[in-house]
Length: 360
Image 1: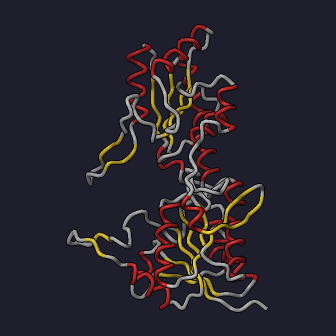
Image 2: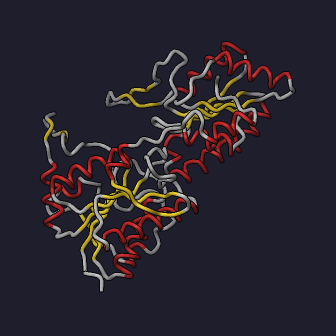
Image 3: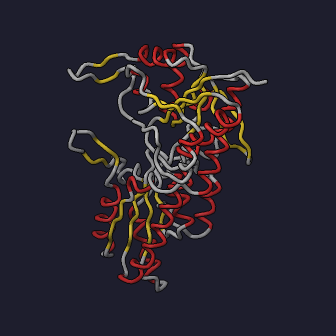
């Protein structure tokens, strides 16, 4: 008979589609099948800093209808490093011990953390410091967590970007325009590459591969000679200028954020080729909405596997999707490997073999 346990679960970092499906699977497996207690920690690790701990008991009734809901019912944050937490007076305070204390105040036997490489690194550091039994679930729309073929949120982001390209086809052709779609991708070009192929883009630009504006304009001119009066371009937000400078926008708080590469390219293409050019920036649309079936399936498999690792008391591991199966590896190994697009990636070869311009 499996020993009764009380476990916690939190979502950390940026939101994405499929988080609720993972939460639901954890509760179905842990509470519904094993009879354990499950507590959701609100607002990531910040919930552990609150007294009393900002948590909510999770039962089957509370998660039964969240499978198709976007975002996360627990809330999340990608701000406030707990080891250097910004205080009202402007100082930075190490609040990691408050998180550890909160975990033990709830009497938890284990914690499931859903996050990207940055969140998992912070959670592991806290777990090692505070004797916390941690299991990780990878999520990121960028799909850049090492050692897993898929992370929660990626499939939905690609679906949304692909649909945007599908729609842009018609207006581009109707007005004989170059249409540029700027998609997310903090450091990696997986969304742009996948959506570009699926959505029939003519030019795909990703941060891992250099590009030449002359080559791009030449590709546009060649299409015009062939009687193709429009062109679809998809670009990842992390792509730099031709001279290697990052393109950022400053928000009202004075923080630099990735964004603007689409407009930069539009201005350059228009000036060099004379082509009428328009830009669409998807932004956070890629994070929201109903999760795709693949994200729901992957998230559900990850949630069940995470609970089973707790049953085995096999901690300090992250669940991964490999070869059409769920397995697990040490968290340290997962966060040590960054998953960028390689020049010899099969999808790079596929795009080039179909005549899609990758900028060089």
